[in-house]
Length: 177
Image (cartoon, one colour):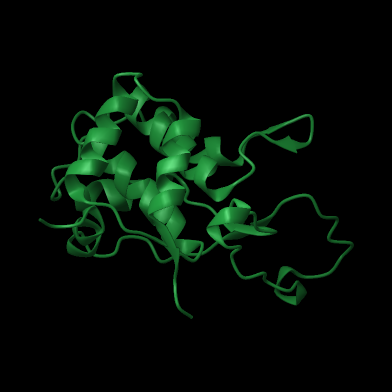
């Protein structure tokens, strides 16, 4: 039985553009390249990072084209852009999603529930969440059926973002440098 991660490889390994955003620091005129990059924390530490690489709406369009086999029809570009920005959300200067797993789950949840595409929202949500983990140094290794069941449960509101995050964290392993 194929792993869900194999589908991402088949889709072209999607996005490789990195736009690091540093959360909670005052740059003080120091260029981003001068800031040290932390390696990902072990899963038990919630994968908190000083620098998180995010996907934007353009990246999601690339992924959507891959998962739909080129038959991409966007229903609402604003919803897609909103989904791309949800993992970065802050409330009174505090991150709403403080771990990589919560950020990936929030992205998945936004895509699945708002349905920005005419078709392929569940696939895009899963691939986007796994890609977000991938570009931040984590490989999500889940069986395809387990991942599909979990995405279905999220789409049917049988599981919340926190529950999805727990599954992503359990399936994740750090990528070798």
